[in-house]
Picture 1 (spheres, helix red, strand yellow):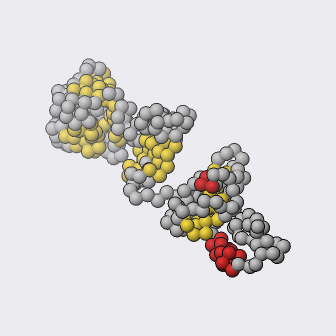
Picture 2: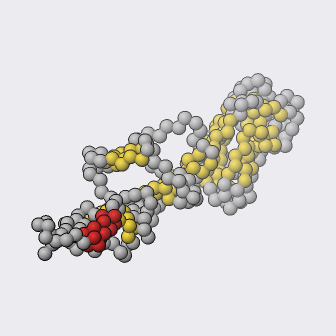
Picture 3: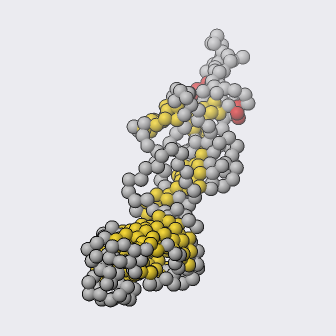
Length: 350
């Protein structure tokens, strides 16, 4: 009876006592065939893996390009452990020790002591379309991702149990926008201009240069005090009128607004019927039909006079311009002036 075959390749061994003659096909040919088959990774297919592999047996699947070795456990079909290689798609789970790193060239991905992933370089997601997702995150068993970052830079956030409901995105050159409400918990510092288009919008107008008008009683729009107003909005109006007028010409003013608008206002100033030194103060209410509201100058047109204007403008369904108009009460060759520094402000309240 021959000696037991080798444990790994099952090579045939004749009797060690020399009583058995050498049989070439059995003792040499068959054994060398098995040695040749076992050299390196044994080629096979995913359906023809060796049925009785030894522990450590390496194989390469020609139909999938994947590599395996047997860990020696039973059954043999469950003993195969995949080895990553560059020829096929890795089909298993790859586990690294907690202190291990994954290096791809100079880029290194490491697990920190706190359990998070750390990289020595940036993360770049190359996507096909701007609307493709570049990054998202969920918490526990969320049914929706709470955070989503798109390839175009748009940022969305939600509660996790419903769709994301707030966003932040680039709406144009040098402009960051959101379609939702924005709350600042501590301080908000604006270095440039603050623009509000809805309730709370402030629209200031200021005369940087004096405008002169002579020999005219026809109201004409001031070149500086014109406001664009939107439909179905309400504005508070306040301002300071600075003018100079010879008592022979004096100063009158009025306002125009879009069709359907209403404007209740008053102007606290000296009446045009005043004497050269002083006169009565006008306090009665006015509206858009008040197109000849007169204010008086004193002495000559070099004396600065002031009047404080306040009002309540309601715009109906038609947008347009809200305009200060003015002229002389009586035609005079001595100019009536609306002075630099005159300013009016609209504040939207509804």
